[in-house]
Length: 313
Image (cartoon, rainbow, N blue to C red; front, side):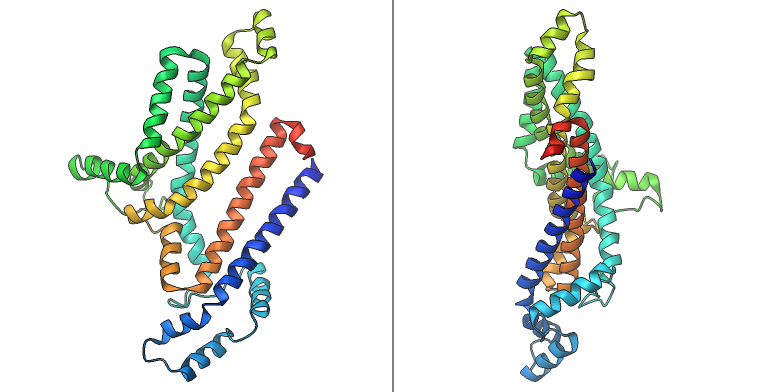
């Protein structure tokens, strides 16, 4: 098991280095454009060269990358070009907002998808058709349209929930819950549609296997077979789907945060990209990559615990 963990950690480190290197090399070609943007339309070649030299952007890109990497390993990701605020605390603050939406949405999605998938696979008939119908609705309804519709109903007409804004949990837990309710519902409906189909398919495969028929001939109840045996065996691919769903929700945060005016990671990344704020973009990329690596590592470890055969890969 330790060797398995070491392999996954090693792969994660290599991935993080590759992503950071490629991102830095691509951004290094735009240093001069960023300098011109900072100085404005009246910038002269001399003033551009001066700010390039002052920020160290005139050095070879590979030298700049290793300098950035050494500082990043110490937790120093530089400061924003436009606000002069440290990058790391700014990214962490925005990431906290995004995770406060994604984590509850993912947990609710997992519960709903597991219940509907198992219910559909074990019951069949009208129950299965209802479950597939609900999944189809989740697939077909665009997230943006769903978000606008929920805002109109619950915020504008009923006035039960706020249409925009975010309240930190530490400030007011009740207000925090109200501020994330609609975004979480949007993410759950889209995510549950995909995960339900995956859980249903896997459970159908498990319930058709020989060991299930053997357990039934021995008088084991259907509920015990599902909970103690089939669901555990179906858990490994379901966890993989769950990790992919987390990454997908992370990407959907850009739309969700802009619709609901949330000060999260996605909107922060979008604004930094528009401004060409290179230190912030690098910090956002680094933190996002680390988060994906951690999620994949936890998923791999959980899969290794559920399915020992996975540890030999």
